[in-house]
Length: 153
Image 1 (cartoon, rainbow, N blue to C red):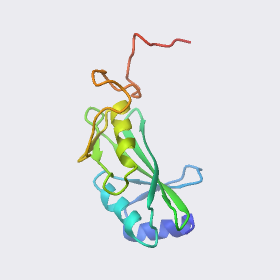
Image 2 (spheres, rainbow, N blue to C red):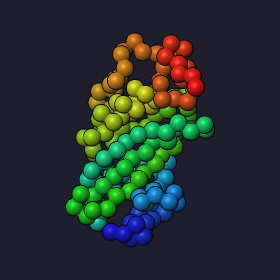
Image 3 (cartoon, rainbow, N blue to C red):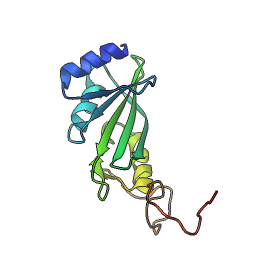
């Protein structure tokens, strides 16, 4: 399916989904966190899109919000897209886990939790992945300060 065909299909299901022009090779859409599970489930389960593989999940710390970024691929239909969700509450960022849909999400979500502090609701094993249990803070947040390992230029 071409990006234009994907856009038409997704818009027919979810008219309020916003498509973002970023000049990238992937079709990019932005959904609200309350619509995430409906949209991502439909993208995976519908035979016309069949996004059966989540090959990347990450987080971006923007000044006004966190943004979850999901890269999806259909291994049999050979199309890809990027799905983004803004988390407006920077004090307590949380979003539903997608582990039940994509097994690859389990470790990706733990990494985001560990480095950004995003809580994935209903995650089966949400705990630190890379840092020690007694580590304080989230090192990939823009406001993180590490006086011990600080690098100056």
